[in-house]
Image 1 (cartoon, rainbow over the protein chains, first blue to last red):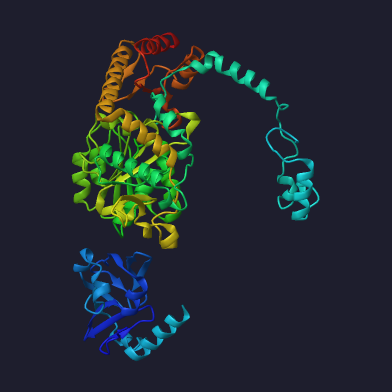
Image 2: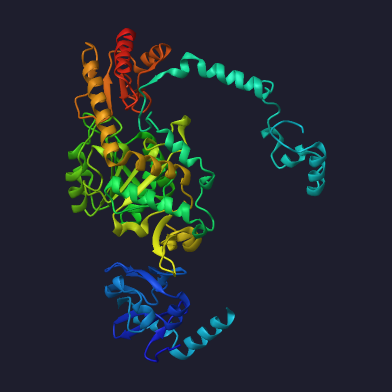
Length: 130
Length: 445
């Protein structure tokens, strides 16, 4: 499993790449691996105001359907339309396959997210409990 | 044995009660408060099998059992070829359910897959599911589908000439969910297009229409599809499936979701069910569709194989976020429809539609000759309304004494229409029976 140092992570397994007042959001290597082959993603609605922890869209793999939760608050600014036709990119390159971008309404929230080291520990613990 | 229908002996019963730890059968009902339990049942003495047969034979030879039927309103007395019963009675098909290990039952899945293909073709739509309960619940599910497909809109606009039973099912489904229902009153028994235009605000998620509508008026909603789409909403149609051999299909009208009562395609009336809920949609909405969908694939040896597909929509995977808590389908009824459609073929369906249409026109012409009766002027496929000079229910009571059930009095559904009768014709009604209808109404007036 790979958890790049430049990203922040949520305990529900999303990553955020924060640049000033915007952030790209995707799901982690651990998340894509747990889901298995991803076959469908319902992208969120552009312009929607969301709060950290809100379920913003759905992802389906061959064995499960799950919600994706935004790790930060703000407005959905863009979505990665490439994924609509090729959701398997999330399995192949989880950190290049962002799902949506946010205009952050409260950039300070980023401090509450996990760094790569703490996130790796969380994943190890979850993997052990299965 | 204590009686013919329960095989347990006194001894069996004693043993079973001992295992559960109660003294008598009555004790099993102790959790029901005594005041809610029946003290006795107002039933006749039980009959022996022979006595029962004799009684049933008497009932079926009663003139009332041969009543000529002109009642419809969504459920019609169509002919069902004997082949339908013969084929679906094969033991191989004897379950109404999709099997719990579905992929082990390739025959059942293939039948449902072919059902989906036939129905999609007939409706002119991209996809169909493996069936729902009946036309009313299918329409309610279609409305819910639209709410999932178009987010953040909370109103559904329904033409009040959609079957009143279906409208009541839709409102039962929607009431606890907080959605708003706006009904459009029809004008001269047809959709009031001006009123609909005014009702189309930014909160409208879908517009629900029926063709032919409850009064039997056949319409073309292609213009409405364009109007509804330009308002960002979906067009949901409820149609009479058999009529699609003659009338424009939901696909041709560019509807987004279409539902229908499959009773007309090989199901007997049998006192109200079981019937068949048909639901179809454009492919882009397939993930919002409820119920089971059978797909075709290839196994590891590259042979054709059938599977239940897109299951993450369903409750056993998506849990509380499932598209619907419908997890079963009308397997046996869907099979009847498949056999019926296969037997009839494209040309057979067209032929039966032409027969129904011609007989309906004949009935309208003949009823128009009655001085005090006004036959509705709109285009009808199989059904039409007539205005009578007297109360329609009273007239029906008189006519049924003579062996003719002349139609549905509409007062019960539309309070202002106590003198209106809805008359339906099927391919089974002969010229002599239609003439009898006219004579019976003339004499009863």
